Image (cartoon, rainbow, N blue to C red):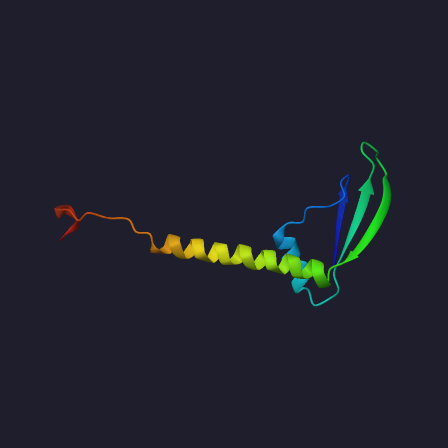
Amino acid sequence: MLQVKGTERAFVDVTLDVWKKLIEAPLPAFFVVAKYARGQPKPDAFYVVHVSGECAARAAERLWQFEAKATEEAEKKARRSARQSQTQTDVD
């Protein structure tokens, strides 16, 4: 799998759903990063980064934290209740 990114900075932002796809892919996964000088239309350099080892571990940790928080919030939401008063018109 391959994810292509372009940036003027020393890093690129990658969404968690993309990280998840790349980490869970049965095939090798890579980022190709095109590095641009500020305001230039053509890239100065290209970098190929293999998704493995430390970068994959950091992304997996971030995913687990996010998923744990989402699960916790879903459970809290499920425990919330709303009162419904029963009136005479509700009873047959």
